[in-house]
Image (cartoon, rainbow, N blue to C red; front, side):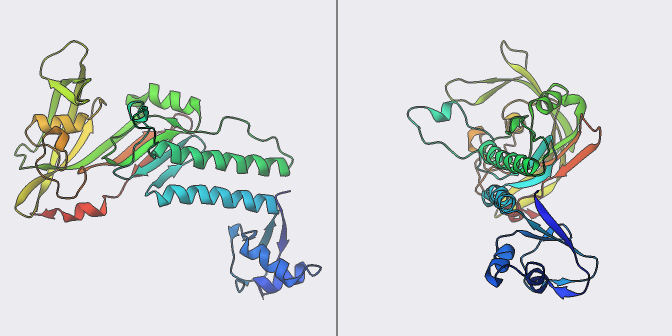
Length: 329
């Protein structure tokens, strides 16, 4: 059993209730139940000795193995949060993370060469460690309850990615079937995907679309943009609208919303440069200013229809605090 549940019959403090209930154990042993996170009141973990109880409340005391397992899962989640990653949504099939700027979505094969043996932290690795521990905990609890544990692979699968310098919403699958369904039906199931950026200068046209063929230069690793169909290049279409204007010091910027009809590497960054307004902080594609000491591009909204339940999942990543340096004009 994962634990034992006791019904409160009269008003009491939590510690007093536990001491009475476990009269055969020492006071220190009972206090350890609380400090080690083994006690739940009405289904919620509680460590407060003076937590008031009223008749009808439920007090559950978890088995030591279960409490240790849940603590490890909490620690794994805390590691994700300490890395600056938020979890915007999670269920049995998907997890939508809020990635900070500067963190790779997944390691690059080029980045793990013999010349650069040190592994760089990635969003994938952080989430993978979290779901592995989460699954181990659920298996342990199932075994203790006499249920058949879920033996499926515990890991995350990459559905899509965003650039290292870009922050915001990224969805991962928690099983291979979920990954295949969302990836193969991406255009049908992804209902909204919007990026917010600050680009250099004033964009006078209120809205429009940018189209070109993109091809990566194998030497510089920059994406090259061609206005006509080019061998090996892929068609990329970006829609945009102007949200307003801002300044930092003497420099003027345009706040833009972008949505993608296609999803090519560096697509928004290249297309912003194509119209003469590179994203602030994007030296790679021609920016001459870096007012917020990072790429001023944020994946703000991701809405998709769950292919299993058919429900619409809407996630929104709050704008990075550093973007407040852009003063609206």
